[in-house]
Length: 361
Image 1 (cartoon, rainbow, N blue to C red):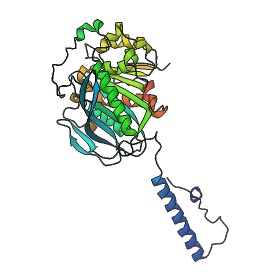
Image 2 (image 1 turned 90 degrees about the vertical axis):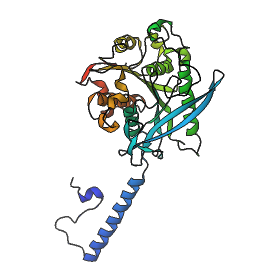
Image 3 (image 1 turned 120 degrees about the vertical axis):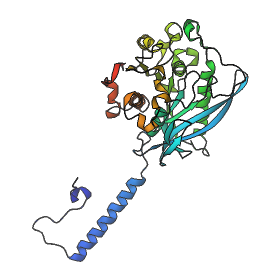
Image 4 (image 1 turned 180 degrees about the horizontal axis):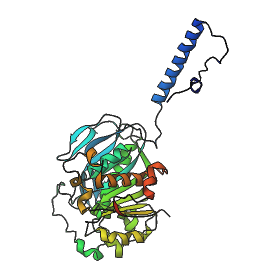
């Protein structure tokens, strides 16, 4: 784009006026160039708004463990953390899934919304890397852990039988350890956020915390939102439930009392779960969304969707792209409280979706 000198504060000689001596012209040019250089430097070092992620953010990644006491026992959980970083990302092998992250890099400047992730039954905290990395590149900090039922979690006793077919007899005690895990993780992260010697110091926006989960993880985050009243944590401001095991809430719990926005995602080949989601959607009274992907199975929200592709390649098309785009738009609207182009997708059904419903009340 051609920029008029007047737009830069530089006014050329008007037509009909005399030219100035060469030394005056050179002095004028030198001072102008100095002024533009100073402005450029100031713009370059100006901090980005906490609500506006930098355009060139990559995903950082690190692992650690937490320990906490609950139900008279000491629990240790392996934690996975993705976050925005200004450092250039590198190809990273998670152990079969190839991603693009900067391992143990510093967190990008500013403060960022937090998303807690809960995995499915027998899954792992890093089971949905294409999405957790994508969130980090959009300026979110994402934290997950291995619950006690994870196949990767060391244990001294057998995994509890879930009895998924007996949903009507589930109570708020069923998999309550998952609720304990998520709140212990949140408390730990907020503690790091308040300590100036930690890598998370003042990087979390404590008033912008969301949760997402897959399958039994969807059950977990719906419970935290208030589907089990005794699980409710008001720090959670928005919930994304991906093919959630939600059947217990059809007859028990308090899902109609959830006060925060909820997005539910399902698939046409997710035969045991998705057919129940419209019933759950109808019970929700806060802003709500329900999308159903064509030809997607229950495992479409796991790393299996990325077979043969990197986490960056898989989100360029197909259902992984739709999952990512709608999920990001949901949190942009209900955590960052944005409206406009970033959230326009929420108002329409993408032609590649099987169905889409929304009610923002």
